[in-house]
Length: 112
Image (cartoon, rainbow, N blue to C red; front, side):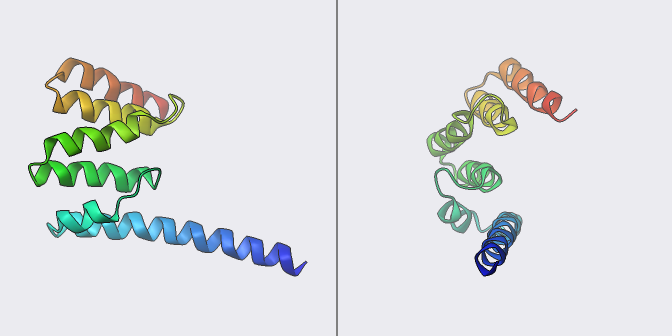
């Protein structure tokens, strides 16, 4: 019983830390601390943090890095809404507004 309770506690703790991390990163972004946002992102990490890191790369004028970071999101499974969000970001950075709009619409359609 102790193992089960401990496992549940760890799961809730990890979920809370995950949510706090995305929230904290968003606050850093809003405060203009783009480099700190970029440093917070980890490949395979929270997709919301990766998205904010991609936006931060853009703010820092690091467009190639932004495209790479959006690409990390786009490489997710097509059943994951973040795939289309990342794809849309990449397409927009590559001046493909029509493709970006189509990908964004697919992402929105997944949440209906």
